[in-house]
Picture 1 (cartoon, one colour):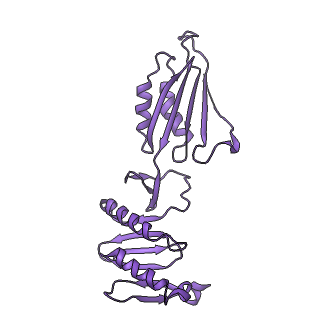
Picture 2 (cartoon, rainbow, N blue to C red):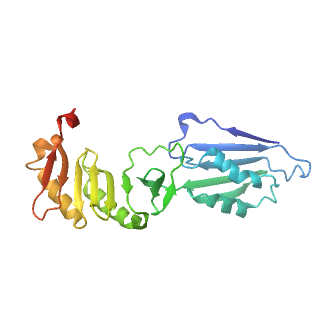
Picture 3 (cartoon, rainbow, N blue to C red):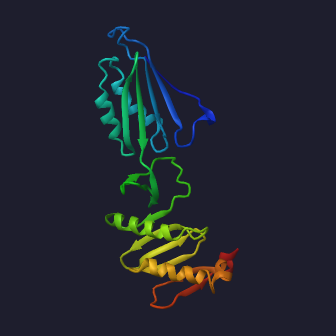
Length: 237
C-alpha cells in the first residue's frame, strides 16, 4: 500500500523552491523491516514539472527496499523528463530516499505550445505554467539560435521602461519585426538591427519624445530616415 501526501508549507517556501512531497510506504511482507523503504522526499521548484509527473517517474522504483532501490536508474529516469536538467538521488538513513531536482529556466514563449529555455532548446509548454512577463519569440525553428542571439542583443539595448522587448519575430520575406512593451511596433528589415533600433531610440528621446504615446508603428528600413505611423482614435481609446 502506498500513501502519497503533499506537505503544507504555506508561505514559508519561496516561489522558486515551492515543492516538497513525502511518500510513505507500508513495509511489505517480502522485505524485512530493516530494509523496507518507508519514505521518499522530493524537493524542487515544481513549476514546469507537475506532482503527478514526478510520481509517475518515481513510483516504479519505490517497490524496492532501502538497500536494493536502484538510485542510478531513478536519477536517469528523472533526467529523461525534458524539463528536468539536474537530479540528485541519495539514500537517506535509516529507510528513506531523498531526491532534489532542478528545472530548465524559460527565457521566452515560442509560438503557442513551446518555451525557449536557457540552453537554447525548445521545450513543450507545460499545462498551467504561468509565463508572466516572458517575451514572445517566433520564426522558423531552424533559426532558433539566430533569433535568440538577436533577442539577447536587443534586450541588452532596450532596458528602459516601456522600451523592453515584448515580441520579436523573423520572416524570410518581411525580415525582423519587433514589438515593445509600450505597444510600439518596429519594422527592422533583414540586417543592421541594432543600428536601426538605435536610430529609433535617438528620435524617441528627441523630436518624438512628446508624441511617443501616439506612435503605433515605425518603419526603420530606410537608409537615413524613419516612417512613423500614428495611432488611430480607436487605438488611443
